[in-house]
Image (cartoon, rainbow, N blue to C red; front, side):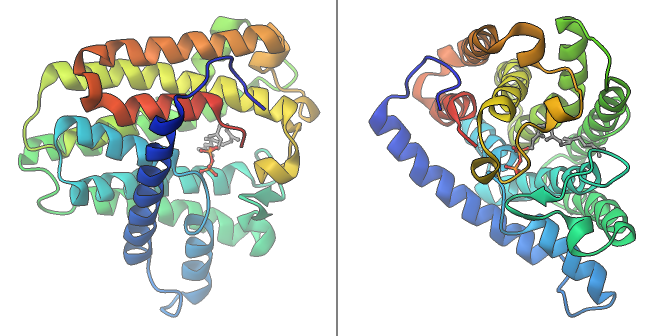
Length: 308
Ligand code: GRG
């Protein structure tokens, strides 16, 4: 399925596949090393943390952190740390989101969701512990050559994942069930629930660079704002159009839960047009950087044309 009408340039995307595989392997290694071993007490919690965080997902946020780091000339080893921290926050959000008190979903990344595989109390603790570990990683000495900028990174992730970001967006989402929202209200919810962490992923990658170039970071922030929203529009299209096996999570969940989505508010065709418009808004601030921004450009195409 093609959620938007724009086509990737084939050789560019082949190169992108090699790069994204490399980044996915790097972040998997970084996560594996930072998560506590499963045979250390409390074993069940550590086992469940590894179950939730390793071996799955598209790693879009890690790819964004690396692509932005590359545009800003950051050391990829530092980008691994930023990428792993954001993926830990993302994994925690998925574990909590799947719980019966939230979205109540049995399937995640093609396997039983964490509370199904373990139990509700363990899943709750997994989310808590993954979140703490993310901040532990980001606080490690020397991640940034300037201590003040590293503190900004911690604040950035805290705001993006807290009540003024992802957790706040989730609260609005839960309150919106059965409600009719305007497009603006839906956008506000998603900028917080999904967009804030996506934006943080790109910015944290950029902040790892030794030299902070305001214009580049500003262009990345603009890019990330649009691509975060595009990600959600495509997610709504896929929830409506794709099947459970392809998605690795229950398809049609939004409609089942009586949740407003871009497809229910705009209709399928206008939702696809919006994704296309957001893709263009994302890549235009990067035009001046030419091929230096190729990874961010390729990612924008990947995000808007994905089928899972
Ligand atoms: C529980 C505080 C708290 C927040 C949960 C992000 C979120 C908020 C819930 C996830 C539910 C959901 C399906 C949101 C739609 C967009 C989204 C974040 C999808 C999952 O992200 P992907 O597609 O997942 O990047 P993978 O598995 O590829 O990492």
